[in-house]
Length: 40
Image (cartoon, rainbow, N blue to C red; front, top):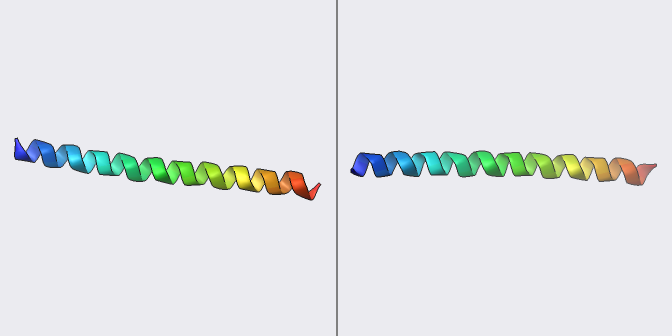
């Protein structure tokens, strides 16, 4: 059962990293869009 816990922990960690990466990408995109709007 210990190995199962390790696998679940690794998968959860990977999901958190991917989620944070996607969120930061989305925020960067929104900031660039706002900057483009302000420059007009």
